[in-house]
Image (cartoon, rainbow, N blue to C red; front, side, top):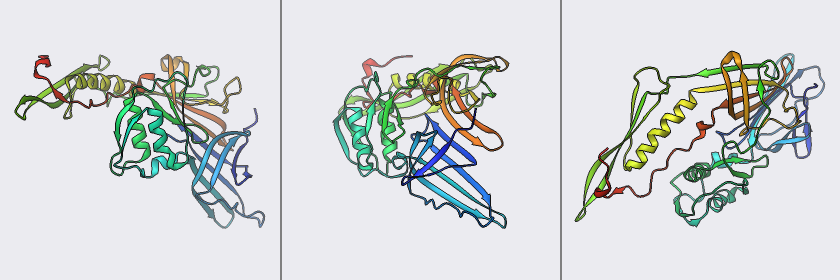
Length: 356
């Protein structure tokens, strides 16, 4: 299979022939990124291509657009015998991450999640769409942007409270989706399509018992508020020895600290078991590009893996000495279990308190 043709297009002019290519998309980050490098002998021929930082651009693979955005950095190097050009950039939604929101300290009222996100991204010329079947939850009565908060921080905070995963499309459109909504990818089977694989098992962030402690208040009347300690507990049966962990927070309910303890145990266990698999080429057997947020069946007997996993990140790479390959970062789907939100009301009724 011949190497795929990767092109960087600026103002209608396509630059090809890149010797080193790296294109990354991840669930963890809102925007995709790319790194391209080109070098040639200084024989008096062509000069270094004129590519400027800040330029609007698009990156394509065999004519299929994978990133539309901006060039962040260019680096030109020369020595006695050669010249090199390195270009890095990110998708069009990058300004949501880098810049402060013009709506800081403002309160937005009576908006559904998609309408709220639309107001956050509108100053940057971006649109919003919601994947089919995604529940956006209840309307926000009010949502206040914090001082110096970036649009991405506000957007992610709002989405987390409604258990929605925000991502960006190729053109920068913000997509409100859920983990695994990308569909089913090709299976990854050792001895068939797997070039290499590795499994990272990390116990350092896991604990046999997790307690979340908080302090809230209940009203005794006449403006007297008495402090009450609340505690939630969860166990991780996969930890082979006694490893207790106490997390302390404030202003929380019994229900919240119980949910938070369970969330900590589940997500820490999931993050402690990660996989990386490399396959040849950029496309699956049917011709579609590998994408993050897809589920895939993984069977790698030497690593003890036979499970359905989530593609958390995908890296396309192409080099003259190693050819074209895709590296998939795989996790258990419950890595993206949503962290419980702090309830708006934290003033407890003493009659409704639990003795647990």
